[in-house]
Amino acid sequence: MSEQLPDLARIRDAAARIAPHAIVTPVLRNAALDKLAGAELFFKCENLQRGGAFKFRGACNAVWSLDEARAARGVVTHSSGNHGNALAIAAATRGIPAHVVVPEGAVRAKLDAIVRAGAILHRCEATQAAREATAAHIQEETGAELVHPYADARVMAGQGTVVLELMQQARRLDALVTPVGGGGLTAGCAIAAHGLVPELSLYAAEPEGADDTARSIAQGRRVEPFVPHTLCDGLRTLVGAPNFEALRAHGVEAMTVSDAETIAAMKLLWAELKLVLEVSSATVLAAVLKQPARFAGKRVGLVLTGGNVDLGDLPW
Amino acid sequence: MSEQLPDLARIRDAAARIAPHAIVTPVLRNAALDKLAGAELFFKCENLQRGGAFKFRGACNAVWSLDEARAARGVVTHSSGNHGNALAIAAATRGIPAHVVVPEGAVRAKLDAIVRAGAILHRCEATQAAREATAAHIQEETGAELVHPYADARVMAGQGTVVLELMQQARRLDALVTPVGGGGLTAGCAIAAHGLVPELSLYAAEPEGADDTARSIAQGRRVEPFVPHTLCDGLRTLVGAPNFEALRAHGVEAMTVSDAETIAAMKLLWAELKLVLEVSSATVLAAVLKQPARFAGKRVGLVLTGGNVDLGDLPW
Image (cartoon, rainbow over all chains, first blue to last red; front, side):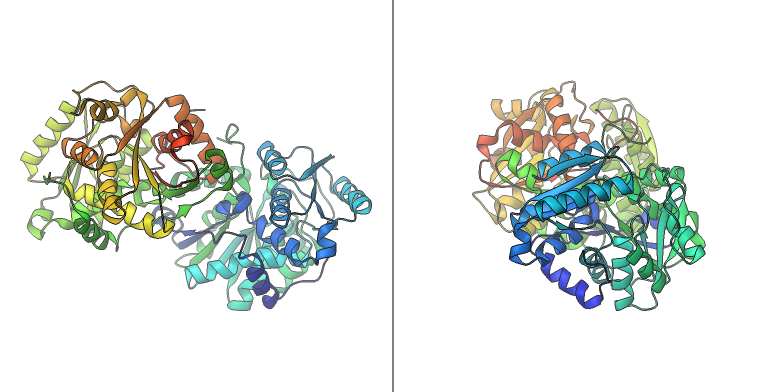
């Protein structure tokens, strides 16, 4: 595992490395949502990324960073869904095996996608300890390389490529809002954004029922493990240690939103942008609409992280 | 009303005319759907167009084709929803009044959008005769210009701009599939496509419960009015006279699909492309999956026409 933080140069390397495999996702604008927010919103549509989430960027960068010998032994990870799916697809682009440890309670659509991508699925209990123990065991048995879902510099660098694209597509931004779970996206984007525009304001949207990042920032140190209570299945993870370090270094502000606020924002996004988005993705719009004064008249980038939902079980 | 057919030059003029207002919508690819179809599918995402449907193109071209004096008297149309919404938005871009006649039974989300865009709404019975009579009455009273939803050369030219973009984005296509209702899109696209690539195969996907185009093509003349029975609310219209003429001239083949096939295709599109699409839009994928031999190994353009659905009332 590679734990230090990437810099802008490594994020640029990642962009070149994943270019043959990843999609340059579109940025959508919407007049009705701009009016509602009182700001100019630039929606980066990572639900249109391969595998239906930004996670493919980090996984792809990690897979293609391995030398031949290490790559041949395959990769392993634990993930509530999107990272596992992303690693499965990334491994398939290189023709190497992928092992994915999935905790109970993960979204059905995400499990199906992992299996379809050709990965070997391993189920475990829905605790951080069980995930890590199962992954460590597989690593030992197969020699597969661990690609941690967020506390990995290769993964953070890959996720940071979202911002390289977004800044080019939107030309100028005043603020950026990403959802925060483990913090791979938030850390990678913070480093990339401040590498390009040091004065950009950075916000991390977080469910009230999984507000460890907000509490960690307030206390100046990572809070203890806790049991998350949120419909945002992609954001039930404690922020990683290197990720938290990056968030602090870049002055990322956390903004918490209730699940009700997130679901209202999700419905707005579906209706206005005509995009299928998972609940976690809607935290960013919920945050902007909850504290409009912070964003009034500004050009705001919002990363819509994924679109893997059970269509038969929508939250409205 | 302008009833003759446009040519490629008029479609190019339309593209220039609407460029300051319309969105160049993305074309999406999807490995899973390609595999399922056994073909290379290029999805033109008109659900991401302004107003959530391709209809904005034709309406915008019509509105900006008017001279100052005629424009000042406003525009009027009848529409089950998307064209009305499109004309309302297009009129707003020029600051002129729009009257929209909407038959009973139209989708709620579409009505709300028309009102939000600032148009004056007029309700009528759900028959072709009632629509036309109400629109004629308003025309007489206000002097507003009728912008027919499909039997209008300005509208067809605007819809044809979909293909100018798609051919540039996909580079080469062997076949094109559009849904057919009144035939504004199908006629405009046929003229544009054959103007650029005379040997391109053209298909019109149609619900079995509104198969007047298929029957008209089979009989060599437009069939009589009939009562449509389909969930595809955007395709309940009889093909227009000039539209049918264009379809015949360009050898467009009709392909009928059941509502069950369309709904299955709609769910696939939502799950794989992560797009919110209305039922009518899914007829094109349903048609390709129903007769795969026609498309095997080919590069096929599919126009996804719109995304205005009631999110609380999905057909699964």
